[in-house]
Image 1: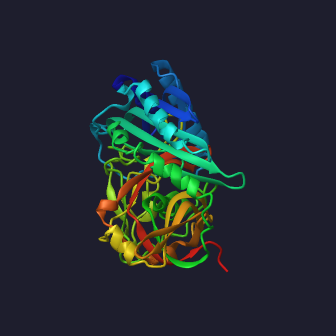
Image 2: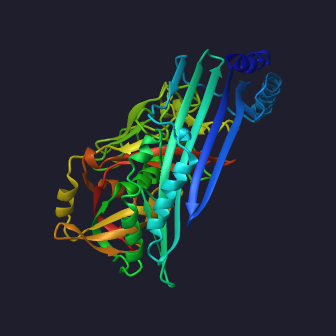
Image 3: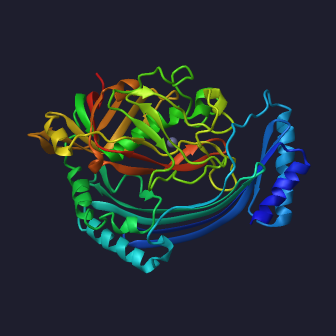
Length: 480
Ligand SMILES: [Zn+2]
């Protein structure tokens, strides 16, 4: 593989590229799913490579699915030509932040390879869940799925790095949709939107208590049909981790991507209110709010040895004791944030896309509350769980989220169930209203598998760890 990669590097050098890299990717994906008793199995292998070059101070990129020496040469020449043409319109030459070179191998740690578990066994598990979910006639759709993903990457740069990585993901999830002929409701497990994914082996699926939670998921989906609509007003609200993860993603993750801040990326999901005068000055949240970017955390979907700039994985504070600190950066844009080194957030979707700044794992650190104590301390408030809908403005200030379910807090416990809960707020006000976070017993890594960005669009995955947290006087439902 090294020999193949060298063809790209030497071809680019001969054409006066000042920088070049090649990423070869062999990707394998298996999805086993079931909908209302009907099984579906898909298996895909996607192989290819992408070459990036800097010529005359501009980027060029090209890719191919034909992993062969002649094709590597041809694709590299295409990338060089694209860079030459792009340079005619480039106002300032690309400047790459310095990074040591690495010759290394990195792989996701796991116990049981999900691809080694027989499909029949997986279908058996999904069938068992399906039977439990459809035991009530009000369930009109029961869906479940198991996911396995492996990416074997080799990356070589003209600076001398040669990095081999094997990333492995496992995922599982199901949901029950109910109807009484008038309204539709839904409950999901372990999280909304199909499945919870982690970088780990099948041991994660075995420990996920899928069967144990199926009857409760079904019964809650049925109960929501006759539950009253969540009341509107200002309420102290405990947001469960499954919902809070998306809140972190939308209101902290995206506005922290430096290319949005600079206006280089705006079309897909907008820009950012966290302008470059804000680090070290903006009181983003209350003192208990600590948000950490971390591509080294166990089980994170953006956990790797090196990013697609060949920059080593890092951990750093984005928000420390409520104060905004750092952006997501890459080698190309780091200097705009006044930083000498990239924070290792350059990532591409597969071999055929050019990498760009993507959020890595971004987590709210645990606090010190026991969950039951927090309930007892929030009498008259609400608990909200699992996202159902989201909306946030182009600068990431105003947001509204809908959840699958809410409960009133009465006598120190979760009481009456409410359907169709929503809440809304403004990012900085919201995070400053956070006054209690549960401890690490309640902290879970929640995966996002559908983060879209760029034109042409790219999908990325990342994880947001968090524990149930309380937000004071949150606007719930319709503001009057
Ligand atoms: Zn996103």
